Amino acid sequence: MLLRMMDAGRGRFALAGAIIIAALVVLPVAVLAAHAWMADVGHWAHLAQFVLPQALRNTVLLLLGVGLVCAVLGTGSAWLVSAYDFPGRGVLAWALLLPLAVPTYIVAFAYLDLLHPIGPIQTALRTLLGYDSPRQFRLPDLRSLQGAIFVLGFVLYPYVYLTTRAMFLTQSASLLEAARTLGASRLQVFREVALPLARPAIAVGMSLALLETLNDIGASEFLGVQTLTVSIYTTWTTRSDLGAAAQIALSMLALVLALILLERHGRRRQRFANTQRMRPMQPHRLHGLPAAGALVLGGLPVVLGFVLPTAYLVNESVKRLNLVGSISSALLQALGNTVLVAVSATVLTVACGLMLAWAGRSLRESTRRLLPRACVRMASLGYAVPGTVLAIGLLPPLLWADRVLGQVLQYSGLLLMGSSAALVLAYAIRFLAIPAGGIEAGLLRIPPSLEQASRLLGESSGRTLWRVHLPLLKPALAASALLVFVDTMKELPATLLLRPLNFETLATWLYAEAARGTYEEGAVAALAIVLTGLLPVILLARTQASQGHH
Image (cartoon, rainbow, N blue to C red; front, side):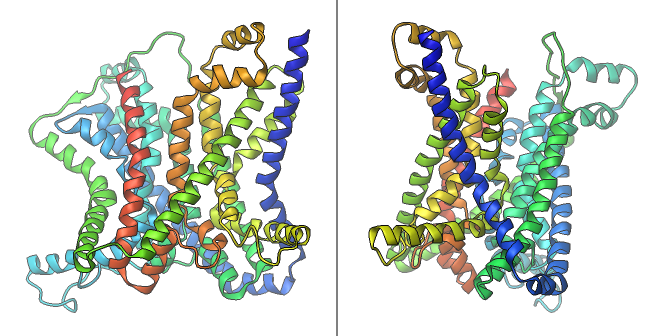
């Protein structure tokens, strides 16, 4: 009886925390809706006539193009390394994840210089073809919708590769062998058996890639593509028009909702069950020219999405350091700001994620589960809200909080907007889904008997969490913290809108240098972000490798 009363108290505390966290996540969207409703209709008329049609058209075409590229590259490469064995396959299996380490705006930053009419690639091509100047031969301009589709597609395809390869690795070999015995070719087996079974995984991966596409601002702006995200940013920064920006943001959230429904639909269709242990398919061994062709074909996305941009950044960074002899103090300050904000946001985000996961575990057996389940789900939706939309929605409540704090503390400055606190809060809301999901999965692997034994020995709920659960959750906590840390380092849209004056991070430093056209100045910052981004990619590669061995 006493244990049940203590459990009820723990459940109420966890539920209160989950409600507060969920309210903070929903607050920006509610504020956006209120400002859009109260904004002048004339703003909407202007937007509907001059801004939204082109921005919406570009956004839809960009989503369609990037979705197609990601589906083809991600699914094709996943099948290649799952169904075939050839020299270099083991390296290629994890190397195909490397483009995830490079933010989209950095790849655009690199390719703008690499594919410049007098850049290294076009100069080499003209030399090989016997031309003397760009007037005689030049590639299509990268600053276009097609260029944005190329850049984003070759960076984001690993989302589809990850989910689809995991599906291929768990498909039963007996299904594929049965199709082969019935006379189907290997292409027919892929098209008629493996691909239909993998469609839910492809839909989930594509929804993640397209959400990242919607969140992008740097690559689209660098490449001259006016998307809804770019329109929101420019409307706020150039016109300081919060109502109009909120109206565009709500239009963008409609697309986000459609992508979430796509992901839910894909997951709903994933209903394959087998009570027996399935034997994984054995890859078909390739030799000679087919093996070389498979290696070249599979390596092309890695070269275009990671090797070329990274090699460019290394080369430009070395040239810059040789020229000036040291890293500038301003860049070191930006690095310090980035690490400080990322560490603060990581601690807050993981703590909130632990609270949400603990609430779900504490109330799992409750007969009134609707409220806690809704809170956990709402609190995890921040990842689906683009950074620009989140920042615009947070501006009014943060400014109101600053006014209240100023009156209470008799302080004339901005405590939240004038410091990095606003950034930390935005990052926590944006990336809360990462630790919430990872820690929840870790808690599910801990037997309830361990907790029951601790409670029977007289330990309180808090000490049980501290002494039993947290030690067992160390892998999940470490993985979640690493992913959040790297994502906060790379985040650009929210940082551009919420950073205080004279506060630069590596991402905003690079954005400013690229906007000025001083690419060599931004290469060092970009390389630092890429090297940091390699950490979670290595973690993902090791995780997938262990899944492949099992």
